[in-house]
Amino acid sequence: MTCRHASGAILCGRGAGRRRRRELPECRCPGCPRYATQASWGCRPHFFRLSPDLRSRLQLAERAELAANGRLGPAWTAVAIEADVWLAEQLAKPAVRPTWREPELPL
Figure 1 (cartoon, rainbow, N blue to C red):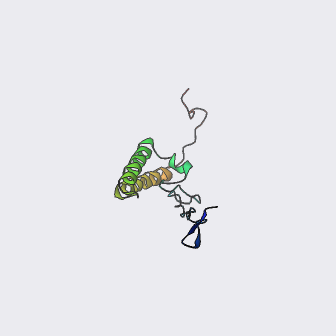
Figure 2 (tube, rainbow, N blue to C red; figure 1 turned 180 degrees about the vertical axis):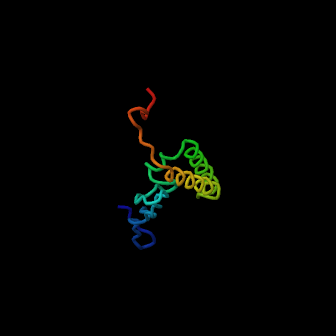
Figure 3 (cartoon, helix red, strand yellow; figure 1 turned 90 degrees about the horizontal axis):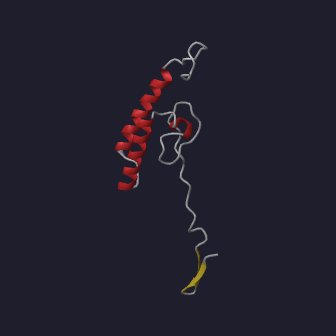
């Protein structure tokens, strides 16, 4: 317990160390009920569905802006919008199912 005496009064810092939990942002993928991490674009499965280029650009913008001013800014938002557009294009494409003549992976 972290109680102490100061000028005749007992000061207790029991709840001082607790931090309020911030609400987590929702995943940016349409229809996904999961939550994203604090500064992430989306939930883990949808984040790794993005192209490697978009993922690295999101992470670089996140690191740079969090180091500069402690919050996400316009550079990260611009890359996040690009990721939203890219994912919408990928979801709009018809699903191509491999057949026995065209295997999914090259042999």
